[in-house]
Length: 343
Ligand SMILES: Cc1cc2nc3c(=O)[nH]c(=O)nc-3n(C[C@H](O)[C@H](O)[C@H](O)COP(=O)(O)O)c2cc1C
Picture 1 (cartoon, rainbow, N blue to C red):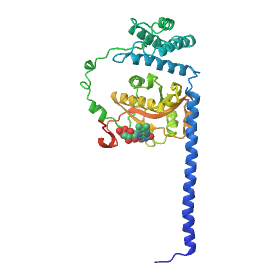
Picture 2 (picture 1 turned 45 degrees about the horizontal axis):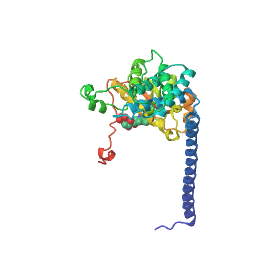
Picture 3 (picture 1 turned 120 degrees about the vertical axis):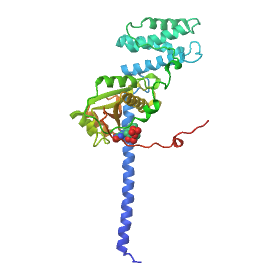
Picture 4 (picture 1 turned 90 degrees about the horizontal axis):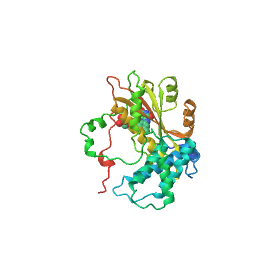
């Protein structure tokens, strides 16, 4: 075997040392970056969210009212609701809904509060209330219900057998024919189709029915190209889609520190339901990740004007299918990898 010179050994050692130091530097830089990015999220959440419940904006108080009204209708939907369950919340709802309508006028939020309280009073009208004075406050609130607004909270009867689950729709076909599409026809998607999909997507569950997700739709023109240039996963096909969606979530809906990551859950559920709703109308879509550092986020916000209190969840390409296309098979993990029965 050839003997290596001391100089060569020295070079080798230096190389190892350089690799080691480079790795250490990268690790340190990544850690700093991670901290800075979390700091960005923290400052957004603490400025625009409302973890201390010191309601400053209409968005904060609306979220709180939605939460309270939902707790009433939720309780009423139990098999045997406790008589006058959640009394304090009902009183709080009555007080805050009055403040809300005094400040912002009587709109769907106010109508929803009044109707939730009305349903609550009717459910227990024969029972003695915990406090007469507070009962008057609740009663008064329900009497202020605005007319002509159909946003009603409360409970309704639902007979599953009347829906015929799965009998009119081939759900297997529906679920197994959605793909992320990266080829689109040169055809416009109508606003009506987007509206229908958005309305269906509104049926997605959201934390306490606060419905924090927002949908921004852009044409894929010059502006579209600039939006897509901020995203790293659409090269080679993004330009073909007719429209671009940006799903955002309004942080003003989150009222506790525990909800710091809720935006991504509610926004994700909304986005997925929207995608199914497009699919149900024969429209094609492709999710585009917004897994970016804050610099990218700021860059996108220079291209499009998005409210500072909203975080971007993901982007979407929307379009019509071409006559024929190819899609990746994208095999799924075996069921045994993802499901654990603990029964
Ligand atoms: C949050 C999210 C971000 C995604 N981002 C991209 C993207 O940037 N570019 C892309 O081509 N596909 C993107 N996809 C699509 C995935 O690659 C695709 O959903 C996955 O491979 C499964 O394929 P399927 O959607 O056809 O079933 C994204 C999907 C999700 C859910």
